[in-house]
Amino acid sequence: MATLRIGKLFHLTPLVDDLDGAVEFFTSVFAPLVYYRGYAAHWHREASLMAIADSIIEPLLPLPPADGAVGTSWFRYMESFGPRVHNVAIYCDDLESLAARLDERGVRYTDAGVSTTLFIHPKDSPGMLEFSTSTWSQSGDPRFSPRWDDFARDYWAHRLPLGLERLSHITTVVRDRDAAREFYTGALDAVVLPEQPGIDAATSHFVVVGEGVVFELAEPSGPGRPADELERCGEGVIGVTFKVRDLDAARTYLANREAGEIHEGPGRLSFDASRTWGCEYAFGDRALEGDRRQ
Image (cartoon, rainbow, N blue to C red; front, side):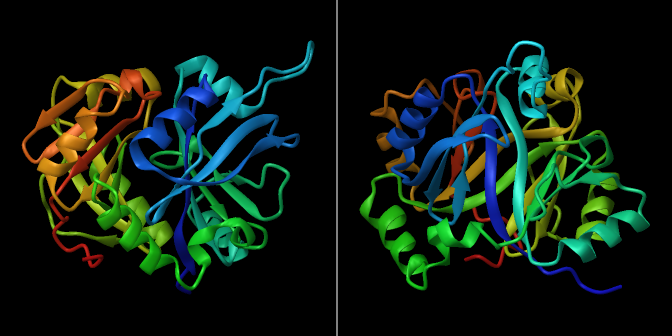
């Protein structure tokens, strides 16, 4: 079986009910480079794309359908579950090979009417995944600039008080962490990191997809937010953790933001997900064991 040519994270897509508020939150906390904001008729949505170190966040406002029309899948999803992360998008240069791999496993997918995109059916994978070729995306994605890595390290890690180095990992709550790991390794050639602690009230596997997209596959181990989210919404993204240089400096910086209460745990700071559109944005100074992005 041929190895898939999967690239870096394209974007994380939190569905929001207030795009202006979401842009204000991300701007206040992360000082992103915003390189797109607009309306797309095909998706009937308004959105913004913002670069934050090595990652892209796409807060997206699904718009209600016209009278008598059917709402988009994004709109229906937010109607059912409220604001929360809908999907993780990753670059992939060969969607045809990916589709063949999925066909072999009986995994459903769609291009949603766009030939450069493949969405895996959310009931056939642990969390909603999107794959996109670079046909149009690279032209606007600033991370493909030859000087981006040096700029990002200097700007986010050293010039800004948050001291943000990179997106550490994306936490996806799953029913069975072993089955989720098998999906990611078997269908997407993911690399498994050593066993290590994850979020509270869960046991986790950590896997790396493509060029450094790290997923925490968190299976609830008892009462708590992971179990509550799994019961309410099913498998999907519930958190994003960023690696910072100095947690004390990050704490001081975040305390001066007007972006909501900061929760603190061992080696970790986070915003309350109820204030940040259903996703817990967290910060830690621990590098994942086995993570080569040092």
